[in-house]
Structure formats: C-alpha cells, structure tokens
Image 1 (cartoon, one colour):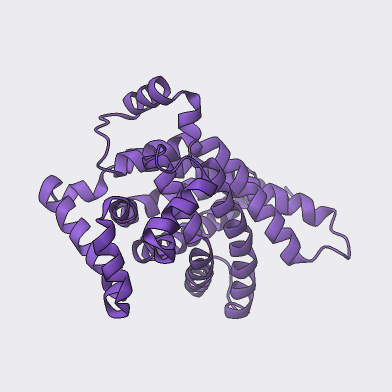
Image 2 (cartoon, rainbow, N blue to C red):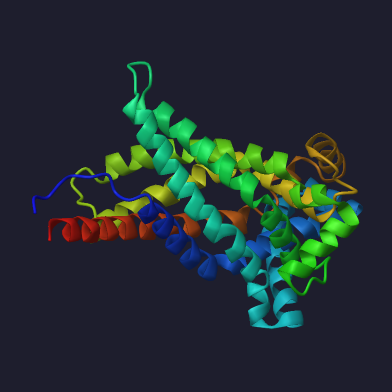
Length: 312
C-alpha cells in the first residue's frame, strides 16, 4: 500500500499524557504532600512568633526551609517514610485523567486554531489561548478530585478512602464542597498553562534547532525547556496556589478569594502568598520535565508505529 500522511490518532495524546503524568506522580508525590503541609502549617502558626520571624530578614528568608524540614520530619516520624506518599491514589485519580484530557484538548485546539490561522493570529496567541482553555476545561472536570487530594495530604482529615471522603464532603458541605477553590484554581492554572506553552515552545525552538523528535538530545531539550518555563510561571501563580489550598482545607476561615486574601495578608503578611514555594517549585519543575518528556517520546513512538502499520 502507498504510505499516506495522516493526522495522528487523538488517542495517542491521551496515552502520552496519562503515561507522563503517572510517572511524575509516583516520583514527586512527597514534594506535593510537603507543599500542602507547609501551606497548612502557616495557617496555624502562632501569629506573634510569625511576625517576629518576619521582622528579621535573615529569619524570614530561612522560614520556609525550617518549616519544610520540620514538616518532613513530622510526617516520617508519625507515618514512616511511606507517609510521604499519602494521597497518591487521589493524586493519580486527579492528575492522570486530567493530564490525558489536557494534552488531548490542547492538541485539538492548537490543530484547529492553526487550521484557521489568520495574519493577526501569531503562534504565541494560539499557544496562549489553547493552553489556557485546555487547562480550564480539565481543571473544572477534575476539581472534585483536587479537593479530595488536598484533604488527603492534609492532616486535618482522617479519610480512609476516596469514596468515603466524597460522601463526607457532600453530606457536610453539599456538592459545592467538591468545588471549593475552583476560582483560585482557574486563576492559577489557566494563565499559567497558557504562558507555559508560549515559553515552552519558544525555548524549545531556541534550544533544539538541530534536534530530531525521538532522539536523546530532543528529550534533553524538552526537559530543559519545560523546567525553565515552569520556574517562570510557578513564581507568577504561587499566590493563587496558596489561596486554593487554604480555601479547600479551611473553608470557614477562608471562604473565597477576596476574603481569604484579606485574611491572609492581615495576619500573615505578603510573604504568606509565597509559602510552600520551595517544594512547589521543585515538584512542578521535576514533574513538568518528566511529563512533557515522556509525553513527547510516547507520542512520537506511537505515531511512528501507527504510520508503519498503515504502510504495511
């Protein structure tokens, strides 16, 4: 048969996204748990002591690392080393389908937008809109698992199963409880996802002008570009991540973004908006590099296999 150039099957992007996400979840879940606990720790830290610490520039700079070490030791002491992987099942149920849906929607949107691309639409505009839209759709669909994941990682709740957590939230807080923090999640994830795709594509073009898809060098370029883009957007969106965590864990004290922001700034100061930045930065940088590298490798190999089968 004659080889035909056809559009890769959409299922390839689902498989690639799910595979990359699963690998990253298993490797970086401890950092995700520590990030949640560090942000939670500052909710209940003694206000007077926090203000004293914040008044000293040196002490303030060291506060995050001190809290991180304290939280890590506490988790290991109370639950053992495997306690660092608490909430992994909820994270997998949230991240793996979420990443599969995200990569699928992202690819479809970019393909369709490029098909009707006008002179006024640059690649950056397409990437920004497609990235933000794909993340927003995926975030909305997976928000209930995000709430359950945050509470599993927190030590404020004693849920023993995902189904048990879901029933408890619906009974005590209603369906609305499963969507706590959705606004802050959208404000955090959508701009970040759009900006990430813009930076990622530009960096990959700059770093990998002579790399071939599927090669080792191409994998290095993908990982480096992803890590660099992630660092940029993580700093820009961390305040929304802190707010989302506090709204999901302590909805009475932090009922919404506006009141939560005022409460946090009033008692904890501006620095609180960047609590948990260290474990989040490490987690997202490593996770993004793993997910995108595996995703592109899987898509390349499956696409090549599919073309080979068509030519037989």
